[in-house]
Length: 124
Image 1 (cartoon, rainbow, N blue to C red):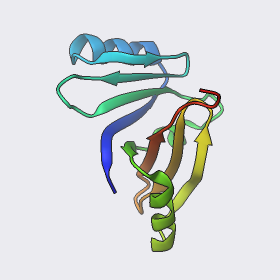
Image 2 (image 1 turned 90 degrees about the vertical axis):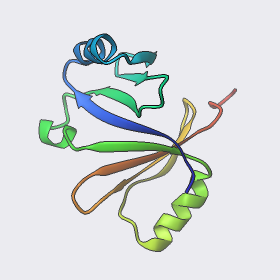
Image 3 (image 1 turned 180 degrees about the vertical axis):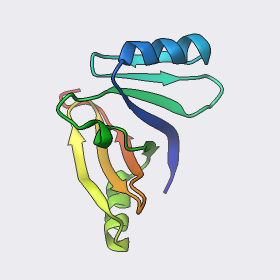
Image 4 (image 1 turned 45 degrees about the vertical axis):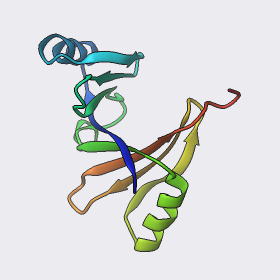
């Protein structure tokens, strides 16, 4: 597997407050800011941070599960390999309209591993 970038994902109640904290105190810059998530990065190669607004329908304990995201190459091939190895796949490979392939695995302790591959958005 070729990992291109790493991202730590936090599900938060106060998206704006967390965004201010990481940009003001820890030197992260906004890459993308939407009403439901904010993507932060640093030029020094630190792992990116994705702040995701907690879905009010999702119980707080489920929203607090740790997530690490890796952007990879050839995710379709990796999906086949992981299925063959018997990995616990909790979200099957899917293509999102905004420009990514995505799948999720969960380790035996509940850590969610999100694998993504960026692709041109539909219609681009």
